Image 1 (cartoon, rainbow, N blue to C red):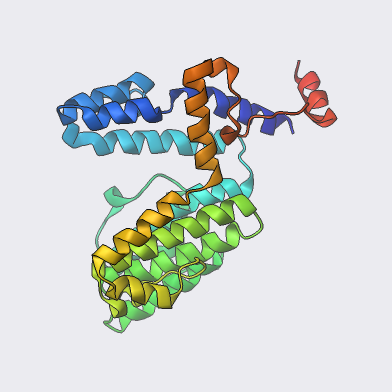
Image 2: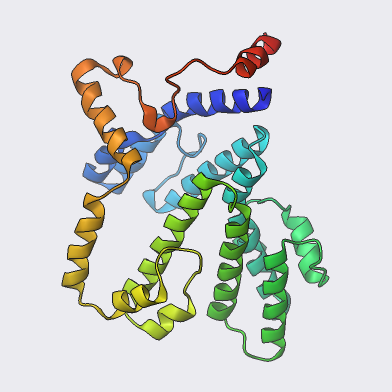
Length: 289
């Protein structure tokens, strides 16, 4: 309980350094990319590193991502929540290592920061064909990649599709018992499937990359691939009009804050409590004092 209270307090304090709507709008309106990058420094985006040119913006994103991952690990985030954010790096690194193994090249510079598995450990497992201690879906995907490379059927795209599908299957299992994470997962999968359909406009290609466990069915995927863009645009307008209650609450909070002052508005979209805390919380806080 004490760790959770500390992590929540840390997250609340750090939330003050989020970009926010105002800064995002200023970045959009900035006259140059360099001016937009300068706005990021106002919230210490990138953990204090500086870049000489806006072209190097990815360095800032990498640094900010590392800071976020460090926060998850240092503050003892619940296992499934940490896994939800860190698992992607594990699968990305596994894909880099499996390609390097069969192509006999060193792609270490293309790896992401450590996820739930240290990169050195992951690399040793893959190079040694020891997949037993890896996540189940990752192990199955690596075996399939091995077989495809040996059979001469592997390509960069095919390996990426195998590892991506395995990642989302593992992610689905990791968050299956958490309603909030499951909703985020479903939304994420649907966005990816929609994006694939709109980019390819080819049902067979979209179907080969289709991710399971979302709300978008293969029939809907086919419609997205074949329907004209004008009709799709009208449907999207309807979806935006029926946006989530949380987003509507957030926007209403901003409106009221402009009228009555931010300090006089309770922002429930961030999960701020409106009732007294449970006895256990008070006891845990007292034990820390």
